[in-house]
Image (cartoon, rainbow, N blue to C red):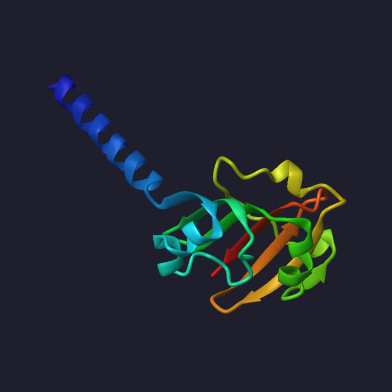
Length: 143
């Protein structure tokens, strides 16, 4: 009897663990073109501000909360074009995400040399952080 109870308890634990993890969907794309042709663009998970010159794109979204996280690289000359669609903010005006995917670099986001923006994406309100190097950006939104 105790063995059956342990097996049942383990099964329930495993089911809860698996179902909780499946809510976060992550994708990687080498180029903007790959990202646009993917499921992420069909689900409106990619923000409208993502520049066509973006590369090394990492995207994650949570199916239940509709939160989106994005990291990408871009050539410095492209920054003005896509950042101009957003409004500059100071760091203390930024609402950092409470949860994030494993690759999310929260320490890098807290650097005072970063440029922060709020973006009125057609599907959501999002935040954009351009790291101090000027060649990598993070975007997150709460839909």
